[in-house]
Length: 333
Image (cartoon, rainbow, N blue to C red):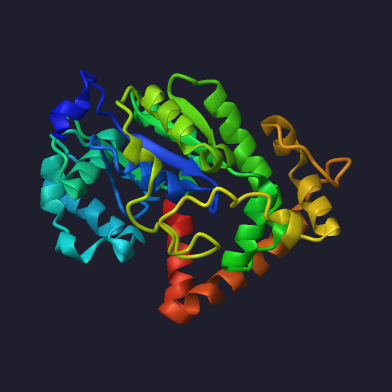
């Protein structure tokens, strides 16, 4: 099928952002949507939208070649470039600048970057898309700078999210639950206030009935639906139970029932109480909410940081692992 046929009369070709907590199905959703003939998805996560916003706040728009080169040099340390496909060849900031189409605000810079990386020309009907889970905290920034952009927010049961966070990176389930509640609840409220721009997708519903959910997403995006959107063409996970699989694991939910003990379930549910109530997840052990002090948050953040660095040491070495995670925090805001 040609791109022109896939357009189906739809003129929208503004950006699509996939956001959500880590280990919540963002890779699965990206893998399925990447099969749509109109969608071109950046392979690495960008994470640097807040950085570009803050850079312009400090320095102004990089309208001259010298200023643009300065921005490109500052951005060159972004983790995006650690995962950029080698077949793309060297990154040339001059080509990025040309792709901005003489627009050097946040919108123009970011779109120019995406279109340059994807080879997606304007007016081609191609929708450029970015899957960066960290942007769950940047929904207002996305809505501000991309007035016609759309957001898919994927949500996973906090208890399974915590199981996966611990299995993948050794994260403390109490802090994972607390962060889930704060971030998911904020994103839920923001998306609910802009239903024409944002759509919430439940991970469990996507597993159970991918056909219905992908049709729903296509309607939201104004795109034609294809049955191929319900199947993966290649594995999207390197960790967890779905690692290396091309099939959608329809039973990849409620793992917490066998992988958390009753006290752990109660702890997760109490720390995630507000978010669970708002999203309609029914507690099975907790009976009331629990707050997390700033001291406890700091202590668990330090603990998680040690585990996170350790998880990357075998691949990158200690110094590289520390630098990788420090860069992520700096770029993602």
